[in-house]
Amino acid sequence: MDNPFKKILHNEELPEVLKSKVLNDVAMIKLSIDMADLFVVKYPSTIIDLVGGGKAKEKKDETN
Image 1 (tube, one colour):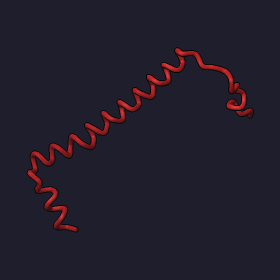
Image 2 (cartoon, helix red, strand yellow):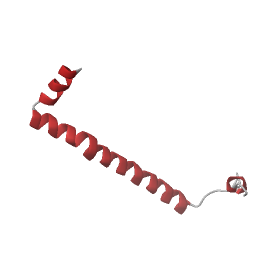
Image 3 (cartoon, one colour):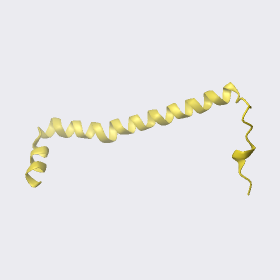
Image 4 (cartoon, one colour):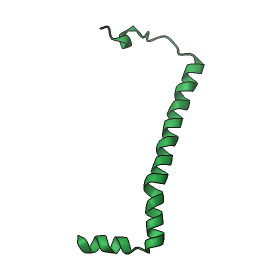
């Protein structure tokens, strides 16, 4: 099997449309990761802190 990366010409410029599509895809992936971090990690932690009043942290400290 031939390596397709060896077929790429070093002096060849990519079309602007292709560049913008790749950058938009990367931006969408970054946004998805940020949204997942917000709702999966930070939001539940905030709710636990607000509702629990810090009791969960005190219990964790006692067990360690």
